[in-house]
Image 1 (cartoon, rainbow, N blue to C red):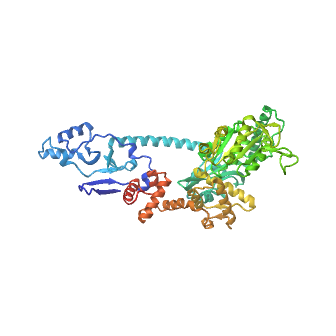
Image 2: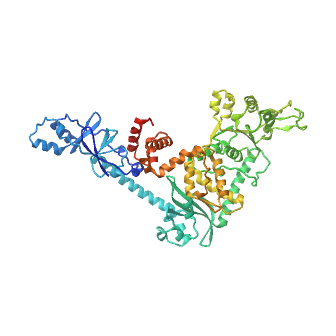
Image 3: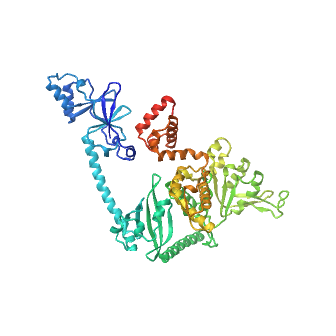
Length: 616
């Protein structure tokens, strides 16, 4: 879109290009990355003779006229020749023939939208650079090379999809098939050329891909019958910018026989690992396949940040080194502790868990160390074995270690150093061999600085730190967690499985989940129980579902969905929305402009105007 801007000071006219707001920030080809940052420029005092020489050297028909870093006009070869034809002097300054009509864009403008050259890049009144035929040619050449590379890559993707043993299909947000590989084609008996472009439910019998598009919840390892064949399938939504834009359907196993074969191989592998451990450690107790084991695969989530945490925890499990698990309340610290134990080298021993915050200070010592018979009034006549002894050759998990009294910290430190315990009221030391895992939601390092936690104990615990991210740091895992919880609740309450509306998942992704995974699980159970039908929708949402502190996030979600409203609200509302967006974007103005649905230039203008009234 062409926009004529007028400078009120000297009435010069400028011609500016303004790209559509939506496309301005989605483009990855900003002119800033392609412009000539040091183009040849002149000033208004340059003579016509000098200007002609510079035009010749630059091999251009126009040069930008810049003074004090600001673009004031353009000198063109045509005007120079006309001026000389009118018998003007060669040494006359060019000031009179400088043209005030030229094309400018800001540095975020997309190269793909340029239609002519030269184009000058101006930001906040400052001249930054130029896009001439040379830069445009380089860009177009690069784009042609990228296009050729993309075509080659697409050929490889197509070969991979068709060579894959698993049947694979991809549909868009309307349920129309976009990819349909040879394996899937063979199963349904429809050539892929015929399937592509048709609705999935017209090609695939009893497909639930439309339901996955509706809910946004993945359906993994589901039994499905296709053309009389029993299969195991995955149905996975494709999320982008908090919207479901498509779904993937995968045929994983053909019939139960193949599943049994895989299970048999896995059991054989796990049996060999267990046998190898027993031999290496001279253990006689056989590994029980019937025991309920917590494995890292059971910890839900596939985001990069949780995957990295699992990777560190898996490494820790292979040793007996002390592990310190940190993270906010509700992130699943005990799950990680159990997984480290159950998959680690101490898995044949007991997993003993102690919540240091839940036991009164005067009872904590007897719980951990045990006591001898007759140690104190009311004590058992047989005495009691403490948690340290129970964890011998196993794992002791001390949760909420940050709440342990200072006096008890000294005694814990001694046990870690000497690996012996003495029961309360006893006189003999008992050797103990256990792996220690501790967890806390507090900043132990700052507690050490404030003398609220012993420094020597802190460094004894801080051997392998495992930090578990909060749910707000891995919101892409919410659909996976939701799908698992819905199946679990259906089994718990012995009712048919319920689906959840995609709109609810979008709302969930806007919420910061201060209670983390635990809060999400509780919310899902509440929705499951309170909803009468088999599909949970927005009308089933209780008014009190999210607490008051989430209101800012929900307000911002509304702002994003109605981005144009930011242009038509009161000054106070406008200021509030901009402040929320800036806070959400951690002060990044480009990101804040995206959230508000306006251009960065518009945001700068609004900030400048609002700063005159009140600092934003």
